[in-house]
Image 1 (cartoon, rainbow over the protein chains, first blue to last red):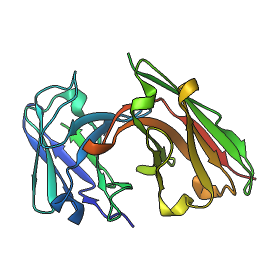
Image 2: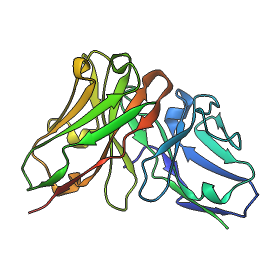
Image 3: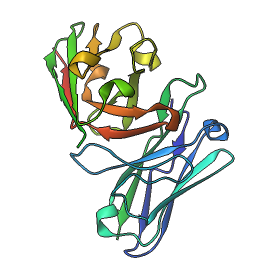
Amino acid sequence: SSELTQDPAVSVALGQSVRITCQGDSFRNYYASWYQQKPGQAPVLVLYGRNNRPSGIPDRFSGSSSGGTASLTITGSQAEDDADYYCISRDKSGGRYVFGPGTKVTVL
Amino acid sequence: EVHLVESGGGLVQPGGSLRLSCAASGFTFSSYWMSWVRQAPGKGLEWVANINQDGSENHYVDSVKGRFTISRDNAKNSLYLQMNSLKAEDTAVYYCARDVFLAVALDCWGQGTLVTVSS
């Protein structure tokens, strides 16, 4: 079973904000990174580290972490943000990774 | 521009073997960890394995340990995944990804190759 937990699905009105959370003990020691995946496409890294966005990722994506919870916030959701979002962190061994089960974000 | 192109997927019988390849270009391949990630049909992402820059360190998810072997050839800018004793539950799209190990970030991904294990 996954060591990370995510809400299966959330919905957000166009232009509104949504927060996606990922819970796990690993976040007490490691940062999360976040991936967006649209149907039939490879995942795309949208956030990593404390709050870092790769080149080309809009600044409406931001992150935070507190205790055992990492969060991804989309501020001013756009239609193209409709996708699955996955978190990842290290497992207890420190060398292996584990993905969260994913959150389906629907932009209404 | 970073490019990762997977190949080697296909249909294989249970118990069979398959070797996946990932050709990398557009970056200094030998400077990065690399990972394999898979996604079963209709399911979420599962990290499979990673390997460090010179191939001296690797890690595997428990479900493939002893059956899969990750390797790399820095002279050929290539990553490999040798998969033995394949099971139906190994059926998935397999992605290679550039692994920024210290940041726990997979920052570039290939388009994936489909492995189907079925009789």
